[in-house]
Amino acid sequence: MKIMPCPLNGPRNINEFVYGGEVKAMPNHHECSDKEWAEYVFYADNKIKVVQEWWFHSASGYWFIAERHTASDEIIRTYDPNEIFTKRVSFDAAPNQGQGGKQ
Image 1 (cartoon, rainbow, N blue to C red):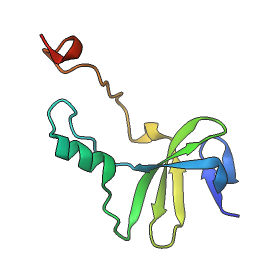
Image 2: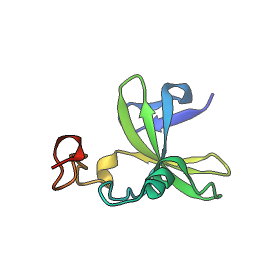
Image 3: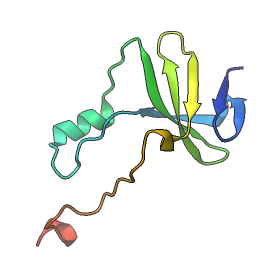
């Protein structure tokens, strides 16, 4: 049985977690092209390295970040996202756009 150290709940069975994708810089959703947004959402580097990944503990509803080596699958550390994210992202309508994108 593989154990994941949850920053909120302590060591738990890996079956209690859901993978949420790699942590990476999000493009400006008001200015990027469809191609840039698709690359952000759907593509990963898939290189052998230590990556930061989003993980979700389904029993408690808690999202956190894990650093994991892609070759060995070793979980190096886990931590709360507020260690690296200090601002909240708003997905409101773009400036100068009202309902339905028309002004």
